[in-house]
Length: 243
Ligand code: MN
Image (spheres, rainbow, N blue to C red):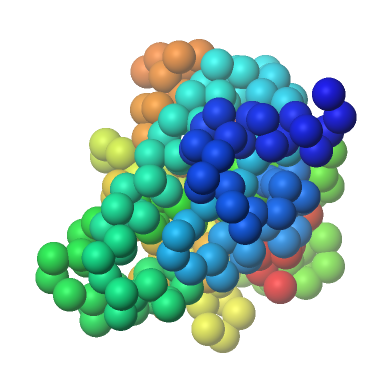
Protein backbone atom coordinates (compact mmCIF):
# COMPACT_ATOMS: atom_id res chain seq x y z
CA UNK A 1 0.00 0.00 0.00
CA UNK A 2 1.40 3.41 -0.85
CA UNK A 3 1.60 6.18 1.72
CA UNK A 4 -1.54 7.96 0.56
CA UNK A 5 -3.52 4.72 0.62
CA UNK A 6 -2.23 3.99 4.09
CA UNK A 7 -3.27 7.41 5.33
CA UNK A 8 -6.78 7.00 3.88
CA UNK A 9 -7.17 3.57 5.40
CA UNK A 10 -5.90 4.46 8.85
CA UNK A 11 -7.93 7.66 9.01
CA UNK A 12 -11.02 5.95 7.63
CA UNK A 13 -10.81 3.27 10.28
CA UNK A 14 -10.58 5.99 12.91
CA UNK A 15 -13.44 8.25 12.00
CA UNK A 16 -15.59 6.53 9.39
CA UNK A 17 -15.22 7.14 5.69
CA UNK A 18 -18.11 9.61 5.47
CA UNK A 19 -16.28 11.97 7.79
CA UNK A 20 -13.35 11.98 5.39
CA UNK A 21 -15.26 13.62 2.53
CA UNK A 22 -13.52 16.85 1.72
CA UNK A 23 -10.37 15.94 3.61
CA UNK A 24 -7.20 16.08 1.58
CA UNK A 25 -5.33 12.96 2.58
CA UNK A 26 -2.11 14.95 2.18
CA UNK A 27 -3.09 16.95 5.26
CA UNK A 28 -1.58 14.94 8.09
CA UNK A 29 0.01 15.71 11.42
CA UNK A 30 3.33 14.66 9.90
CA UNK A 31 3.28 18.12 8.24
CA UNK A 32 3.27 20.05 11.50
CA UNK A 33 4.04 23.45 10.07
CA UNK A 34 0.55 23.77 8.60
CA UNK A 35 -1.83 21.19 10.00
CA UNK A 36 -2.60 22.77 13.39
CA UNK A 37 -3.63 25.97 11.60
CA UNK A 38 -5.59 23.92 9.05
CA UNK A 39 -7.58 22.36 11.87
CA UNK A 40 -8.31 25.76 13.45
CA UNK A 41 -9.63 26.87 10.05
CA UNK A 42 -12.01 23.91 9.76
CA UNK A 43 -15.76 24.48 9.92
CA UNK A 44 -18.56 22.00 10.53
CA UNK A 45 -18.39 19.13 9.74
CA UNK A 46 -14.98 18.80 11.40
CA UNK A 47 -12.58 16.06 10.33
CA UNK A 48 -9.69 14.26 11.97
CA UNK A 49 -6.51 14.33 9.90
CA UNK A 50 -4.43 11.16 9.97
CA UNK A 51 -1.22 11.12 11.96
CA UNK A 52 0.78 10.62 8.78
CA UNK A 53 3.57 8.97 10.74
CA UNK A 54 3.86 5.48 12.15
CA UNK A 55 2.29 4.77 15.52
CA UNK A 56 5.70 3.65 16.82
CA UNK A 57 7.60 6.61 15.31
CA UNK A 58 7.85 8.45 18.62
CA UNK A 59 8.98 5.46 20.71
CA UNK A 60 10.34 5.30 23.30
CA UNK A 61 8.83 8.63 24.41
CA UNK A 62 5.30 7.61 23.38
CA UNK A 63 4.53 3.93 22.85
CA UNK A 64 2.64 2.73 19.78
CA UNK A 65 -0.44 1.54 21.65
CA UNK A 66 -0.89 4.88 23.42
CA UNK A 67 -0.37 6.73 20.13
CA UNK A 68 -2.96 4.58 18.40
CA UNK A 69 -5.66 4.80 21.08
CA UNK A 70 -5.01 8.48 21.71
CA UNK A 71 -5.34 9.56 18.08
CA UNK A 72 -7.76 6.98 16.69
CA UNK A 73 -10.12 6.84 19.70
CA UNK A 74 -9.74 9.82 22.04
CA UNK A 75 -9.16 12.52 19.44
CA UNK A 76 -11.70 10.95 17.08
CA UNK A 77 -14.32 11.08 19.82
CA UNK A 78 -13.77 14.80 20.37
CA UNK A 79 -14.35 15.36 16.64
CA UNK A 80 -17.48 13.16 16.61
CA UNK A 81 -18.96 14.89 19.64
CA UNK A 82 -18.12 18.38 18.33
CA UNK A 83 -20.01 17.53 15.15
CA UNK A 84 -22.96 16.20 17.17
CA UNK A 85 -23.05 19.40 19.21
CA UNK A 86 -23.24 21.56 16.08
CA UNK A 87 -25.47 19.40 13.89
CA UNK A 88 -28.58 21.38 14.85
CA UNK A 89 -26.78 24.73 15.29
CA UNK A 90 -26.98 26.13 11.76
CA UNK A 91 -25.91 29.60 12.94
CA UNK A 92 -22.64 28.17 14.25
CA UNK A 93 -21.84 25.85 11.36
CA UNK A 94 -20.23 28.67 9.39
CA UNK A 95 -17.78 29.53 12.15
CA UNK A 96 -14.23 28.23 12.14
CA UNK A 97 -12.93 26.24 15.10
CA UNK A 98 -10.72 29.22 15.96
CA UNK A 99 -13.76 31.54 15.99
CA UNK A 100 -15.78 29.12 18.13
CA UNK A 101 -13.04 28.73 20.75
CA UNK A 102 -12.06 32.40 20.79
CA UNK A 103 -15.71 33.36 21.22
CA UNK A 104 -16.89 30.73 23.71
CA UNK A 105 -18.58 33.36 25.87
CA UNK A 106 -20.86 34.36 22.97
CA UNK A 107 -22.13 30.82 22.29
CA UNK A 108 -25.61 29.70 23.41
CA UNK A 109 -25.71 28.10 26.87
CA UNK A 110 -26.83 24.75 25.47
CA UNK A 111 -23.79 24.30 23.23
CA UNK A 112 -21.01 26.23 24.96
CA UNK A 113 -19.67 23.42 27.15
CA UNK A 114 -19.75 20.88 24.34
CA UNK A 115 -17.67 23.22 22.15
CA UNK A 116 -15.36 24.04 25.06
CA UNK A 117 -14.64 20.37 25.72
CA UNK A 118 -14.78 18.79 22.27
CA UNK A 119 -13.70 21.77 20.17
CA UNK A 120 -10.88 22.34 22.64
CA UNK A 121 -9.99 18.67 22.39
CA UNK A 122 -9.82 18.86 18.59
CA UNK A 123 -7.64 21.99 18.54
CA UNK A 124 -5.36 20.96 21.39
CA UNK A 125 -4.58 17.53 19.98
CA UNK A 126 -4.00 18.97 16.49
CA UNK A 127 -1.10 20.98 17.93
CA UNK A 128 0.15 18.06 20.05
CA UNK A 129 0.44 15.58 17.13
CA UNK A 130 2.52 18.07 15.18
CA UNK A 131 4.76 18.68 18.19
CA UNK A 132 5.39 14.92 18.32
CA UNK A 133 5.94 14.48 14.58
CA UNK A 134 9.34 12.84 14.04
CA UNK A 135 12.26 14.32 12.10
CA UNK A 136 11.71 17.93 13.12
CA UNK A 137 14.23 20.40 14.48
CA UNK A 138 15.51 19.38 17.94
CA UNK A 139 15.88 22.97 19.11
CA UNK A 140 14.02 26.24 18.48
CA UNK A 141 15.40 28.67 15.93
CA UNK A 142 14.72 32.12 14.51
CA UNK A 143 12.09 34.35 16.09
CA UNK A 144 10.90 31.70 18.55
CA UNK A 145 14.42 31.01 19.81
CA UNK A 146 15.00 34.74 20.29
CA UNK A 147 11.71 35.13 22.17
CA UNK A 148 12.53 32.17 24.44
CA UNK A 149 15.95 33.65 25.25
CA UNK A 150 14.35 37.03 25.97
CA UNK A 151 11.51 35.72 28.16
CA UNK A 152 13.11 32.66 29.85
CA UNK A 153 16.86 33.13 29.48
CA UNK A 154 17.38 29.65 27.99
CA UNK A 155 15.54 26.82 26.26
CA UNK A 156 16.21 24.65 29.31
CA UNK A 157 14.45 27.18 31.56
CA UNK A 158 11.47 27.22 29.19
CA UNK A 159 11.13 23.43 29.11
CA UNK A 160 11.61 23.29 32.90
CA UNK A 161 8.69 25.70 33.25
CA UNK A 162 6.59 23.54 30.93
CA UNK A 163 7.43 20.49 33.03
CA UNK A 164 6.54 22.28 36.26
CA UNK A 165 3.20 23.42 34.83
CA UNK A 166 2.46 19.87 33.70
CA UNK A 167 3.31 18.42 37.09
CA UNK A 168 1.34 21.15 38.83
CA UNK A 169 -1.82 20.62 36.82
CA UNK A 170 -4.12 18.71 39.18
CA UNK A 171 -6.07 16.03 37.36
CA UNK A 172 -6.57 16.23 33.60
CA UNK A 173 -5.29 19.12 31.56
CA UNK A 174 -2.45 20.63 29.58
CA UNK A 175 0.83 22.45 30.00
CA UNK A 176 1.25 25.35 27.58
CA UNK A 177 3.83 27.71 26.17
CA UNK A 178 1.73 30.63 24.94
CA UNK A 179 2.28 33.87 23.08
CA UNK A 180 0.24 36.93 24.02
CA UNK A 181 -0.89 39.67 21.64
CA UNK A 182 2.39 41.54 22.07
CA UNK A 183 4.53 38.50 21.29
CA UNK A 184 5.58 37.80 24.89
CA UNK A 185 5.91 34.15 25.87
CA UNK A 186 4.75 32.57 29.10
CA UNK A 187 3.96 29.14 30.50
CA UNK A 188 0.64 28.14 32.03
CA UNK A 189 -1.57 25.15 32.63
CA UNK A 190 -5.20 24.57 31.76
CA UNK A 191 -7.82 22.14 33.03
CA UNK A 192 -9.62 19.54 30.93
CA UNK A 193 -9.56 20.64 27.26
CA UNK A 194 -9.57 24.38 27.90
CA UNK A 195 -7.44 26.16 25.33
CA UNK A 196 -5.48 29.40 25.77
CA UNK A 197 -7.20 30.59 22.57
CA UNK A 198 -10.26 31.32 24.72
CA UNK A 199 -8.11 33.73 26.76
CA UNK A 200 -6.72 35.49 23.69
CA UNK A 201 -3.38 33.66 23.82
CA UNK A 202 -1.80 31.67 21.01
CA UNK A 203 -0.63 28.15 21.95
CA UNK A 204 2.97 27.52 20.84
CA UNK A 205 3.66 24.27 22.71
CA UNK A 206 0.95 22.12 24.30
CA UNK A 207 1.67 18.97 26.29
CA UNK A 208 -1.25 16.70 27.12
CA UNK A 209 -1.14 15.61 30.78
CA UNK A 210 -4.37 13.60 30.79
CA UNK A 211 -3.61 10.09 32.05
CA UNK A 212 -4.74 8.72 28.66
CA UNK A 213 -1.61 10.36 27.18
CA UNK A 214 0.83 8.32 29.27
CA UNK A 215 -0.70 5.78 31.62
CA UNK A 216 -0.10 2.60 29.59
CA UNK A 217 3.65 3.19 29.54
CA UNK A 218 4.34 5.46 32.50
CA UNK A 219 1.48 4.64 34.92
CA UNK A 220 1.71 7.28 37.68
CA UNK A 221 5.08 8.67 36.52
CA UNK A 222 3.90 11.87 34.87
CA UNK A 223 7.33 13.36 35.50
CA UNK A 224 9.03 10.72 33.30
CA UNK A 225 6.46 11.23 30.54
CA UNK A 226 7.03 14.99 30.62
CA UNK A 227 10.80 14.55 30.40
CA UNK A 228 10.42 12.22 27.43
CA UNK A 229 7.93 14.32 25.48
CA UNK A 230 9.70 17.61 26.15
CA UNK A 231 12.89 15.95 24.91
CA UNK A 232 11.18 14.76 21.73
CA UNK A 233 9.51 18.05 20.75
CA UNK A 234 9.40 18.98 17.08
CA UNK A 235 10.51 22.61 17.32
CA UNK A 236 9.55 23.24 13.68
CA UNK A 237 5.94 22.80 14.77
CA UNK A 238 6.42 25.17 17.70
CA UNK A 239 8.10 27.72 15.44
CA UNK A 240 5.19 27.59 13.01
CA UNK A 241 2.70 28.05 15.86
CA UNK A 242 4.67 31.06 17.16
CA UNK A 243 5.05 32.79 13.78
MN1 MN B 1 -5.38 13.65 24.94
